[in-house]
Length: 106
Image (cartoon, rainbow, N blue to C red):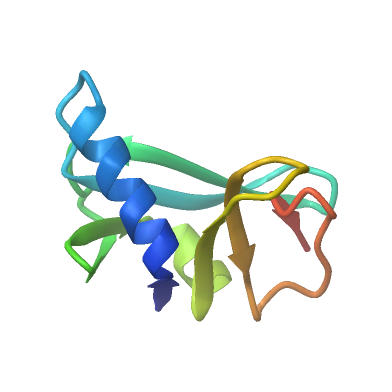
């Protein structure tokens, strides 16, 4: 369903290990809003909700709610470092278009 690059896995492992609140994984969802109609949301999570799909890759658990699963199917998430700024980048084959900020899609 979702693929994490090695850079994303390493960044997430560092974030989980350094957080003050215990976290067992990463919650990813798609919500209405943003430049193109949908926006990606990510947050460290304590565990899955009852309707979540749980994907484990490279020792990272990813929790995706049922409403977001179809929007995120096949998405690759990378962590990039560039002069313009560092952050997570979503390569989503389901998006008809995306904003240059890489945080919004249609």
